[in-house]
Image (cartoon, rainbow, N blue to C red; front, side, top):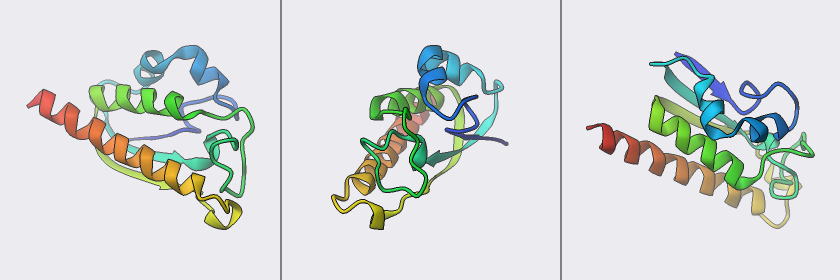
Length: 120
């Protein structure tokens, strides 16, 4: 099983290399036919949208950067599991990080079920 996380798909601690590649080329880095377990690390997001983490990553991913990659991966591969880590609600009094985390997970589940329906 191939394990993907935001940090394993990039070669630098920011989202710039992945944004330069684009979602299609990023997803193409995963071996064909791989079964995927996706780990989403909230600290890979820009702290302007995800301040609630212990290790903020300035220059990190924005919401749609991640959604486009996840949609591409879900359309190409069998996703067998997901998790989202590094959320620290105590560092975010507004709650925006937990809302972001929930939105990303809900969208990813939608992408997975949509792709499975299209393959059936």
